[in-house]
Length: 216
Image 1 (spheres, rainbow, N blue to C red):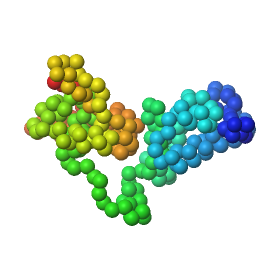
Image 2: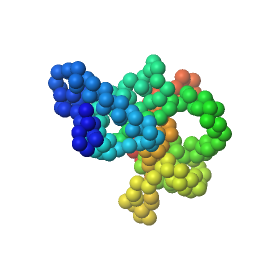
Image 3: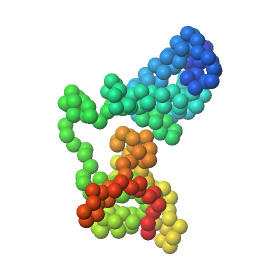
Image 4: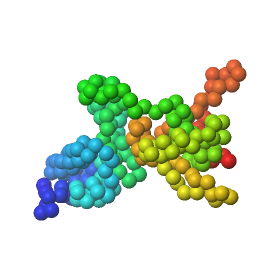
């Protein structure tokens, strides 16, 4: 089922997202395409762009996106028997292990505890994630302390990045989260971040969506 360029070739009637009737041949090609996608992502160990996957597999990008979404639905469900999950981003996808198996993975691979973010780093990261793009001065205002070192550290770790400058006097730098942030926390979009619980004097708390606008 490969052409002269050694790419997996699948006709339009065999694409998982094509609106045509299925046949044994097309089913086989679809399974082979999915298997190839999983093999590439497993071997890569990092996100691979849809553009690259499209070129390697010899199918349109929308086919790869649809297939990745299909794998994500199966692998990421709560009752899934798989120990891995599919993360899908705007421009690519990645296979990774599920968080609940982290202790077993660390023990099996002899990974010592370390590399965890401090409470202050998580605090800054949360402020930026929920209010991006935002300035460092905004983060400082929310925390009540200078956050310059932590912002620099999170930038070096690749969890946040510069997103241009705010069009006000002084033109302060704007910051936002990266795809690495999404991978670390096992989400595909910041839209999957949990809502914030606000507690009153005697209430049980109310779940409200967090505004993405920046307050200066």
